[in-house]
Length: 466
Image (cartoon, rainbow, N blue to C red; front, side, top):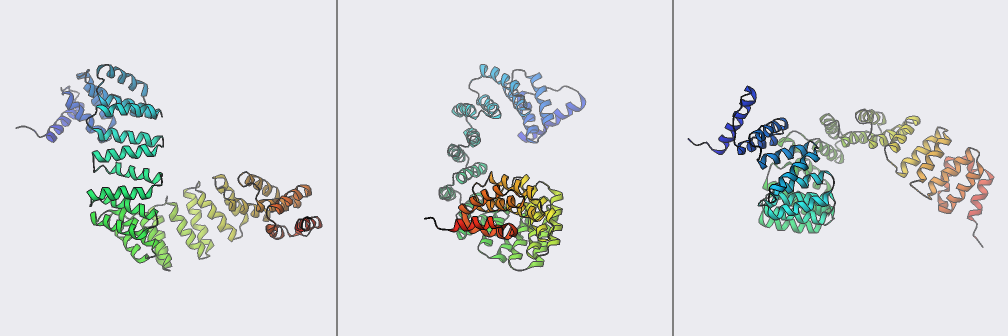
């Protein structure tokens, strides 16, 4: 009785694994070795794939296909020079084998020489019978060099070869998005949907384009069609929920998010959005329940910790807000969003040293917003750390040149530390920039504001020039 292809593959695999266990040597033809190696590679069993390749080449030392598997493994291990040497030898024997060009292109790509990789893939395209794979590789190489126009064109050709290649479809829309060609993306998707009206992926992507353009009603319709095409498509329900939130249809949004919880394991995103909807509807207790579930479900989701912290902050329950943000910081001490909130909460609690620490950590982690620099400065002033406040503001001037709010503070600080000349210099700069911010020096440095020399400078600046 003749074996079916699957039965034959399983038989070969069983014999091969039996051989490994017993140390007996069985003969396999080269095609059987190829099938065995391919099986192990697909299942991520690299050690067994290497073993099969080694034994295969011992039995079939001239097999180009087995040598190409060997090349693939060398490339995977980063042994590019060895892989390249084998490919050069194979090229002398088989110049019409597209896999040689593809693997050589892979090596150049790994070396970030994408232009050479593209040239080799173009040669492979001329001789291959499987154009879709090569077109996809060309698209990826153009993505690497951020040539989104050419990348898009190749992915479109790839999808023309295989109309169900959804990874190509995603890449096409990614290119449209990067090029900010949303109307063009909509046109392309509509054309595709004319031929494939039940493609849930295309409907989903169409909805996202309408969402970007803030055409929420059309986005909603697109997601509904995606759900009609596949009523278990979690992504469509989640995106539909986001649209309904924009339309302030919070109850319907909750319904859409809740459906996803029954289709699969509850996602932290869905729990978070349900909580947000309840909060917007004034259901504080329910909102808190879902925020709590969210942080329990995914302790690494910063949006969940921020949501529960902000919830208590808005309720002016600053102790609770501090409790949750400190828990978040213990999990991820490098998250700048946590430190900004930590600073603001401590400021509300009049814990100024802790607040200053929060603002300082925010800056150290790359948050250079004006508000952060100024807030830290004002806290340092309250702590009497005038020189630290001056240094802080000089750092801020590297990002914000000729800023009145900074200059008025520098003026007040220099007068405070008895450097009147520097104080006068910065006060003049500040008045030239925007004299309306004089209130800053009046509020933060009332004693300085009352000095005669300071008052005289302000009055002189206010006098109309003749």
